[in-house]
Length: 307
Image (tube, rainbow, N blue to C red; front, side):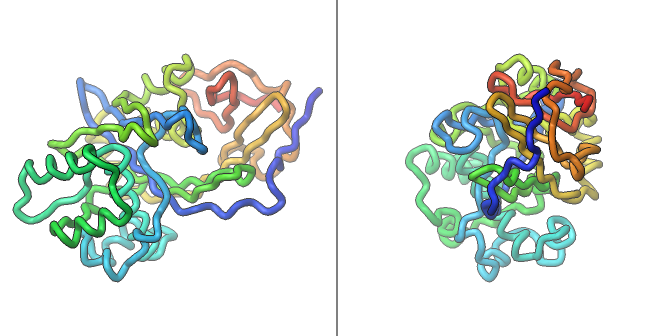
């Protein structure tokens, strides 16, 4: 019987970098859909996986003295809606990164300006497609063109931290937003190679078939969204939703197996070894709850545990 150590991690884990991710949702063809981007196969983190748009918080995002004057929420509102363990300055930086990264990766600009026209959005999208955006582009556009970042469109969904065993680690806030009208998602073709709108149930099914390989947080999020059959019920959830408990998965490796134990697993705090032979190595049905993911043939699959 082969046992694995559940504490497969560096002696000094890397400090996770702050990051932001945005879950775009829409109601289309009678169903709730989310937008997923496929990361480049050359990416150093989750290569080839489908994820939500997002990235790290850059130093330029951490300038509260500047950004507070260029978002559509005051400090009190930011704290009430997006705080939950974050200071106002931290929440502000995560929100700025969310706006910046989603435009860079998906081409959706969560911002507005006075007397805005459709031509304004077309112009900024053309600037993204015509050339690589320079460092500091968002701040420059805010100053030169009078854009205000639409924090009011962002709602907290979840808080993930990359497992300690990973060499690249991120402390990520997952925001959720409803796709703004008049815009479309377009992958950047550099960091991301493909973009799709898909219903959560279909996305989970395609993951199990190998057609849409999902990253673990994306898989968990799609499973959570199964309970919302339309935008009305999802919008109701967003009214009072907070970040919730931090999600720090446990990564377990051996020469042949890789598994993730999620924080709500009953044995998360006690487990020191995992009996791989005790796993039921068949996928669960899409609507069954799970607390472990098994990496098999390039796909993360929910599994039952009988250890």
